[in-house]
Image (tube, rainbow over all chains, first blue to last red; front, side, top):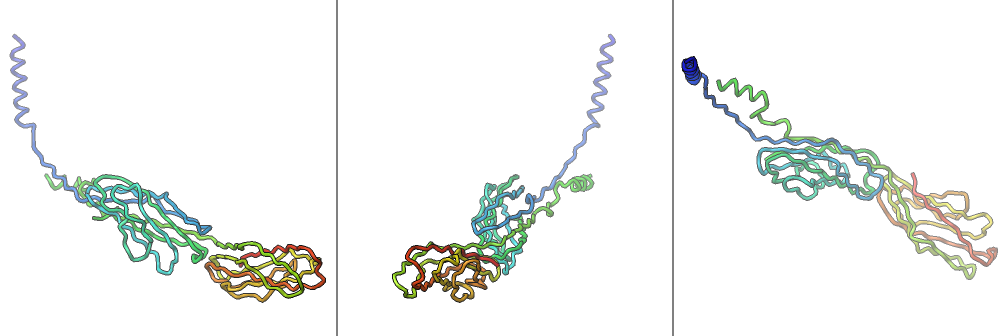
Amino acid sequence: MPTRPLLLALLGASQVALAGSTAIQDVQVTTHTIAEVSVSGNESITISDTSAHVVSTTTLDLSTNSTSMKITVQSDLTPSQPLKMNVSGFSCPGTPAAAWTITASTTWDLLTGIPRGTGNCLINFYVDPDMTVAPGTEIVRLTYTITS
Amino acid sequence: MHRPLFLFLTALGVGSPALADTTATQDVTITTASMASIEVSGDDSVTLIDTTETSFGSETMSYAHNGTAMKITVESDKTPAQPLEVAASGMSCGGTHGTWWTVVASTTFDLVTAIPAGSGTCFLNLNILPDASVPAGTETVTLTYTITN
């Protein structure tokens, strides 16, 4: 006897809630092309003889939500600097190009065909000094760019 | 309804172009030390059978440096008790040649000066003028070549 009215009351309450407690909302998220590149830090190479020097301690981190992106590199090396240095990437997602002899005013495709996702690669510096390079310190600034 | 939400998502970085990180710069510092090397191809010998002045020397000297106007000096361990008169000189070296040096102990002679940066090779000439005061036998004189500023 007490059970039936209670059951009816509960059903009624439920019907009221169903009628006014839902709402529909469209959330539109627009994702642009995202491409990021960062480098682990600066590099320092000391030359004390004419043997070839190889340094591979730089890590390049990259991520993109696009496909077939590439990373270019350019330097501020001036023609008056007799330094001979190559740079290349290895263990990279995508296709590393052959080593680039760093020259000023040119842009080199260091890495092409980067797939969508996040990854990193090592940057390899190869310096083949000769006696034409005077004692002293040179700084070469490299700019890495991720682009389509 | 849509506009505030879009602005909120944009503030969180959702949907906004990541323009700031498409480039990364790196400074590569190359420090080059002073470098200089010198090498002589081998030892030399001559046999004297009379008092005729004899020039000989079939060895070469290779050098390299990245400095400015370096020079090559030579010194010997020849003692005053050794009466042999020996002279040394360099030929076809990159730089300014000294004259013939009469080898004596405890002196250092500038064989070549003003050598430009780079590498080169020159011939080592020796000249000997025996006389009857030199007893029969064999003497060895060690010449030490040094590349220096």
